[in-house]
Image (cartoon, rainbow, N blue to C red; front, top):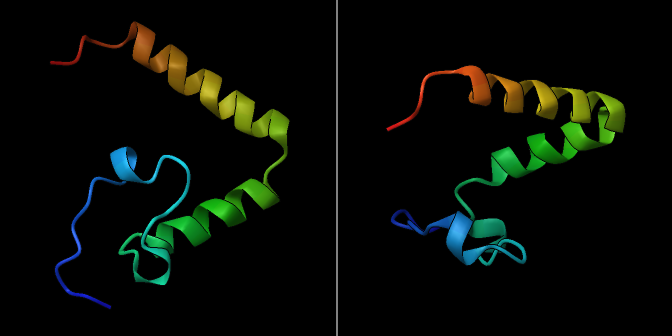
Length: 62
């Protein structure tokens, strides 16, 4: 693995990870995949709704 890999995943990996096994965020990919597999869709939607409400009623971000 290269030590100085630094890309903006949000910008470059829109259609999937471009670094493959060299991705510095691979541990997050695995954890996210596991979460999606283990969590019912209704629970994921509930989490998303709670997050959305929290952002709407919270103080404005700068």
